[in-house]
Length: 331
Ligand code: GDP
Ligand code: MG
Image 1 (cartoon, rainbow, N blue to C red):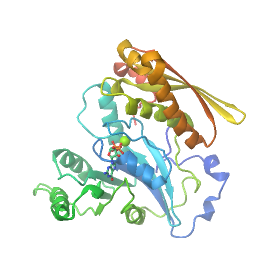
Image 2: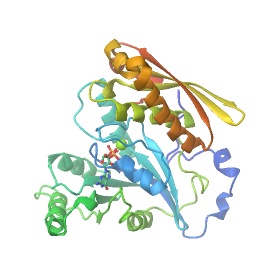
Image 3: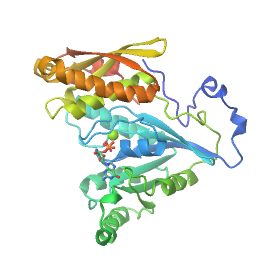
């Protein structure tokens, strides 16, 4: 089982931080804390994390719902340290995996210092956004809203789009209007993100560094590597496969200059295994070389990757299997 992740109430153990810097070195007035990134699938949460941290820590995909695990990205500025927690999109649960995703997103909201609600600002506010706003209206932590994908908004649409989100926060008289700040941003090109970071930092409590200043993620390397493989599977296949895929890293062997990674891709049906392997193994080779390229960037050195595909019927419905793979519904 994974140990409980550090949180505002459960800071990381001293030995994680003590090596490379001293807690006492945080300058006076320094702020730090956990920020949950909340939003419907596909609004750009992972893209924003990657943009802010400047390294590939979250996988992104044009297909909704690729973020299964909560991912912490760590952003350190001279004035503050933000620990960003990526949450799976909040949506209506369809099956066991869906329910776990929702529980995990709701759990994340309870244990943070602040929430960043990300919406697709290039679309008018809709019912899905309303659902999340009402959920967040009941929390006591500060909330700020980023209107993402603003690069796709024509100047003459801007006022109307922003007004639709103002109206959503104003509510219909059943609760007090919400005075959450709205920020126009593009996670894709970075526009508006530095002022967003300043606004978020200003609302964090005063406190020391929670992680070393140069840390970008507290996810075990294994999970990041698995996510890179899963991303390639999603990029190379269509609807038949994506939602039924999980990746297990079997072994990471550090042999000299090269890192060898052995991984298994789990699918539910043998037809999916066929698709993943492809004619003469071509698909699997493409997935492997795409993943390997990303791994080499992450590890910053040569990688040898060996991929297997295994059929495990119904893994999505098997709670034990989910727990083993680290999809935790209990936190
Ligand atoms: P998530 O499900 O919320 O994590 O969304 P992703 O980060 O995976 O992004 C979903 C899709 O939206 C991807 O195709 C992204 O490239 C795209 N996207 C994300 N942010 C922006 C943005 O600011 N502008 C535009 N034009 N596209 C974006
Ligand atoms: Mg995502």
